Amino acid sequence: MANMTVLIVSQEIDPTADEVVLALAERNVSVFRIDRAWFPQRLTLKARLRYGRWTGSLQTAERRVELDDIRSVWHRWRSSFVLSPQLTPQDRRHAEREARTGFDGVVCSLAARHVNHPHHVAALSKPVELVLAAQCGLDVPETVISNSSDQVRAFADGPHGVVRKLFSCHVVDDTGCSMIGHTRLVTDDDLAELDQVELTAHQVQYYVDKLMDVRVVVVGDQIFPVAIHPLSDVARIDFRADYRALRREVIELPAAVMQGIRRFMAESGLLMASMDFSVGRDGRYYFLESNPAGSQYGWLEAKTGVCITDAVADLLAEDWSGSS
Amino acid sequence: MNDEADSKPVSTLRPWGLRGLRLAPQGDVPMCRYDPVRQVAVTASGELWIGSNDGKKWSSVAELDGDEGRSEAWGWDDGKDVTESW
Image (cartoon, rainbow over all chains, first blue to last red; front, side, top):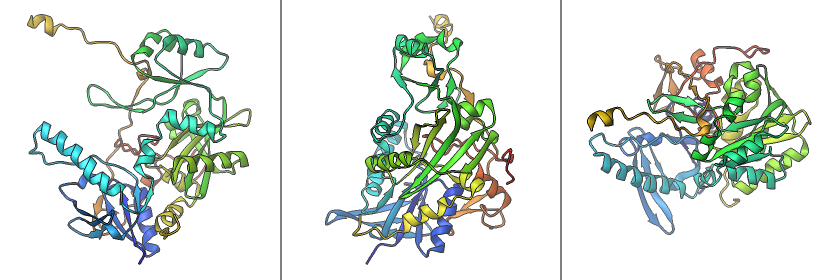
């Protein structure tokens, strides 16, 4: 008998996950939703290895699911484990490591469809995905990753403007403040401080003088491209810096870009991704990055009506056993 | 020695990529709670949060997407698209 439950791993407050929970209910598919923060205090894992697979259960105060009954896992968001406050810092670190290995390890090795499998996500760092995108036939802006100020200076000296892009744009400063490092054009002031490049790895790219950005949400075999027209100078550099100055519309992608995206998904092992492109004035689609984690799309769905929630629900609900 | 330690200058060395950081937007906490039975967020009166006006706004907020996934810096989508009606 086919397993029937979809396991959703996300935060408690996640409207995008809410929509999928409701869409799965419409399909009469049972859902077991958890927040990783519930483990180990509010979520009990009982797993036993039998015949090469984990059997047992996940259980909260309200519900329980048999591991054998899990058809798909949507790894949407990984909260930090919340451990007993009575643990010493050393024991907390130990407990955290054990939870990561034990809990995550069981969930990741369930015989289920994983959207996306954390191993695939972990393997796809920004430099790796740029290489993969290029290998899949997608255009990628000229890029330098370096801790050499000489190389960055020479790269920035070219005819194009260049942008600095952090690998992780979310930074917490010394005072605990949450800071954002959006993509930004490198200025003369930046170039005067290039010795600081030598402190770590830095990514610099040619700036794409663009007509528009395109966010492509891929869900299984379905591809949802949405053009994002920047309506401010800030948004023109990085649309995430000024969400209120954007116009969105559903578009069709060139066949070659579609083909490149499908190759990228197949090669990466991802089943779902949000991919960002900039369309240059030369008409070419330049791959910027792929974001498998979380795959934000609610803001596109709400503004354009694209049916991404239904596609996600269908992907999770599909009885793939014996076919993949 | 203590005076010397106290007057140790704060390092101004920072990776070049950290130039031009901006404070992450700090928004209001959403007015909802997780319902463990229905497995979705609900309003104080028990209605579906995403069906409420607040939830609709939240559903359409972009958050801080990218490789960082969702951000804890909640923000409201209190403005319409410049050329679209919501």
